[in-house]
Image (cartoon, rainbow, N blue to C red; front, side):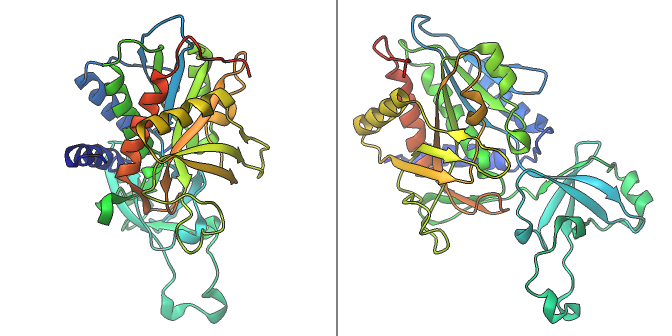
Length: 367
């Protein structure tokens, strides 16, 4: 079981990251935090044109090289119209669920990198007609109220067409080492990878590992591709959420339980607009299964439709890359209040570390 010190350390880093607003394409503040964290632990980084953060840890060149990555961006909106009365119209960036938007707290990042607080308007109950009460307000009718008097007031406060908008940053601890936050997808994955990187420094015999925090995953899943084409890794391990099925509305979807350990995905398929997904490389699956058994970590197995990650496009780059999605159980994905468990994150860190250490000269890439 993880000790209290490690749990508190994970929670503190996760809180720091969740409280940073970093919409797809506007990840700079998240990237700066991660860069500073790695530098403090004697790990140097570079960034590419898109803004991906890369930390290469050189290892045995005779072993297959590994890229371990998680996305640092979050979903949200951009301002698309400023009304004369000071209200803002927005366009979605990523899979924002319209049904959960009314009355939400949001923040707008202005030209001075300041967070301007606002809310999404919701028609007064007393004026709501019976046929409106059970309707979901479509994105074209949603507006943001940040208290501005008029359009001039908005512009004076450094907000323009294209300004990024996200859920208001939020983090709190729940019982049994569960935590609730506004962007656990995928700041929790980032925390896992940070801790893997620090632990990898102590391993003398290991493959070269490229630690990457990617951009624009929530926008179009392709922010990682320039890194893949540049580094040409042979193995890709992607860290993101797995859909927990332990709430009453999710019981028929899988057997994944919050707090019962990390997950590997055996099959994912989107099926909506893109015929894409991941069937993981058998050799990588075996490495993770053996690692879980060795460390006595309960490894949960996921099969899901309607979900997609960066790994979908990564696996077909170059000559093909042995790819797997690993993750942590999470409730309420893409809402402003996602929930995960710190023990699962720590177990996932230990699982990944062990799996990378098991990539030796006997590892077979050919499927």
